[in-house]
Length: 117
Length: 115
Image (cartoon, each protein chain N blue to C red):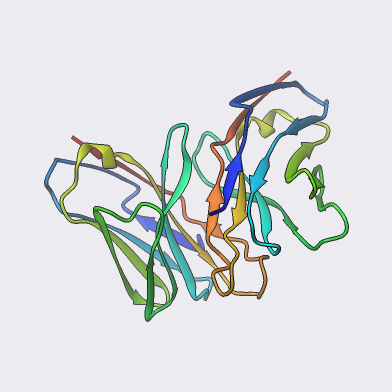
């Protein structure tokens, strides 16, 4: 079974600085996908970035980048130039790959990010 | 208009009552999911459906049932609600693109309280 571990219950960062949110995963499947979602205080889930296990380059989406270290089974989210609106809960998730079972996400416990002015 | 909608958005009910949470989507996706979110536990998969005729149990299906009435509609029922089912419930949809790049699109959530 797949597992996601987010070891940082809470993180603080100064506005305009970069921050890294940690995510490690465990899977026996060679093919998998890693996702990051943002959940602001309003509650909705917002997709941020995706990394496939066979992707050669780290994924980037605007201020978000994914530091993918396959050998270490880590997929850390890097947010550059933090903004006050980045304050939210962040979830790492793995696509529960396995034959035709792609599409079942397993989520980590989440990290609450607080951006200070 | 929102692509994935959930009704109701908030619900308070009593122990033993039957309750249905509804999800509708206009994205044309075949795949739909129900998750619950508890503080400190992230989201956990309750049921999922890869097409109208395909229903599967997720990680925590006990005490829940689902119905896929159409491609666009997926309902979650609590047959006899209990207090530990108090949680935030999310519906999600995804397309099947092959491989693992199947981003899921979430509804706004239903906050359920069982007294």
